Amino acid sequence: MKKKLLSLLLSAVMVASMVMVPVMADETEGAAEDAAAAVDLEGVDVENATIGISIYQFADNFMTLYRTELVRYLTEDLGFKEENIQVQDGKNDQAEQTNQINNFITAGVDVMILNLVQSSSAPQVTDMCNEAGIPVVYINRQPTTEESDRWVAEGIKATYVGADATQSGTYQGEEILETPNGGDINGDGKVSYIMVQGDPENIDAQQRTEYSIKALTDAGVEVEELLLQRGDWDQAKGQQIVQDALTQFGDQIEVVFCNNDAMALGALQAIQAAGRTVNEDIYLVGVDALTEAVQDIVDGTFTGTVFNDHFGQAQAAAQMAVKYLKGEDVDPINMVDYVKVTADNAAEILEKIQ
Image 1 (cartoon, rainbow, N blue to C red):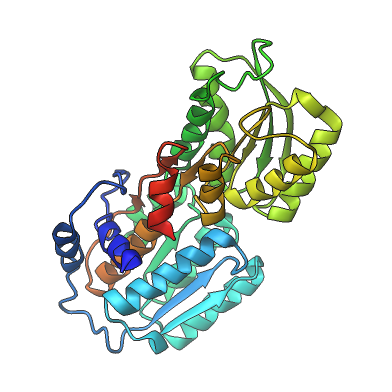
Image 2: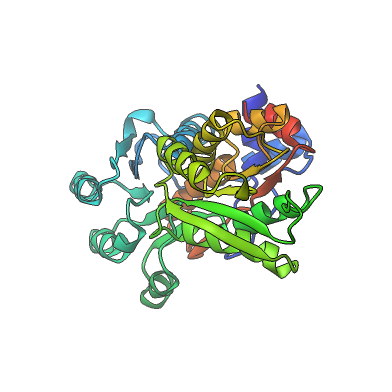
């Protein structure tokens, strides 16, 4: 019932172009039910409509939460038939995913929801879908501004649902600023950090990397980058990178920034193995608010994360697909707000995401 209520609460997060709204507000159950009822399915053949979904990689922790909520919302809340929803694993291989998209086109699905392996493939994929007359909802990995501008200019039925990664990076930096010493544990007047980046081609990775540090420098904090290394969103890689960095830089490292929680959980393993203590002699922040990471915040072994709202994003993506099935116009960019997660609210958020 708790998860059901949360999903209803967050179904209100269908937002206008480039507008972000808070998603963790204290809503009443009645208001939530009204928001869910606001999804107008008139004219949509939910009994027979077909939807093709491809996720860049099933093994990704966050996208597992996302696709689970997406299918749940489409079937349980909106009434689409599960047998008419094809969900494919892109296996982190763009050629594999493009083949899946071609199969969706051959099957004549009514709409696609795509989490691209490579966001740079969006122009090619968009043209494939457009030529087949199939609308496409891109999720999680944002195509370039030039590409989304083209959708508008050429009247292409394509849209993006996601969250502004600049906000998530900014929140990470603010979480460090809000620690008792502002991240300067050794008191030398600067914050020395390592950055464990996701996929450097991914815009979320780029913006989280840039804006987490920008939050510090904008506040007048001097920073020192000891290491920036690619971790591909992977926990094992995050652990290895931080293990090697701790060996190389030792007590110089005051902050470990990770572009997602999976890598941060790996980083935590390395930190603990090295005999360091988070929130005492080193700080650690991630993004996604995975259950394990939020529990670690509650336990005091993780400094902070940022809730990448898979509930709101999955539901907004489904709602955009419904709009296309109704023949309605859809804004090219639809954003859902992030939520900062620290010791102050971690227990509350943990209760909502479990």
